[in-house]
Image 1: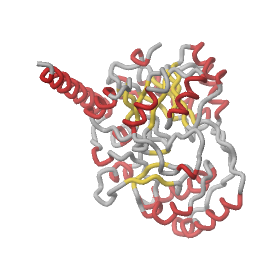
Image 2 (image 1 turned 60 degrees about the vertical axis):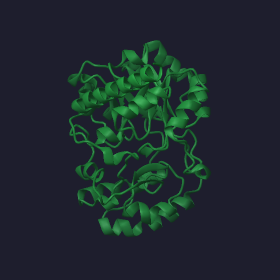
Image 3 (image 1 turned 30 degrees about the vertical axis):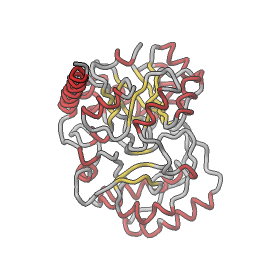
Length: 358
């Protein structure tokens, strides 16, 4: 199976965990000719299975499921305790207890793998690492297309060696978590921009490339295709769609002049993730330890309480650098608009090339 067999247009809807990538969103994208994705991260194995069943009831088009790789436990509980104390005022303000930082770090990975082997889907992608060769081989035998998200050429080479069908190349412009295979605090902020990364990965591996990071318009899709990508993955662009499961405050914040920029932060999860700068990020980002998923579990209740209180200043407002370009269109219509913009950009490039050659 080739990537082009999964969708009519080279447009992939990013799997956004936390309820954003709902079955209705993936179905609408697939029906319009893109490739929709469910996000299994932060869900139980049964929760993932129920969403797959729901999505199959909405569309017969191919779709993918994204899994989080298990993370090693943090070795210094004292560091997490210091951050817990830092957040005590937030717990008082939102009148909710802090979460249990030790509630597990494997995200039900093995159980989810078992379900996806027993009841295969068209594509499975992986975040925060590369699966074992055996896991990828098992999916290959089932005809499931596998994608490993990478942020460096070395990670792309590891994915190729393990037997992945493709890599999703994530530039530092991307919203949400940086999908580094190893969380190194010394490397914070040193990620590679998407266009440079595509070229470096293209010269390192032979795998198809899905480009991700700040893409909001069809002309940008044309640019990454020209740079060597086979498809583009868009997250923030679909976050504003009515089918997205994002909180209304999150959707509004994308174009709210109050939120003028994005930054990478560990404040909400303990791993670098790009979001709109708000009060919580400013106050706690400088002190957040490199401890995922412990910090994520610690702050989960705070984030829910902030959303329930209508306080965007306490929420994790994940967004890519192109967030101000968000359009509140139905997901299917957005795919069609992006495809039309892509065609127009490619036609303009072809015309410019002909003019130079005459």
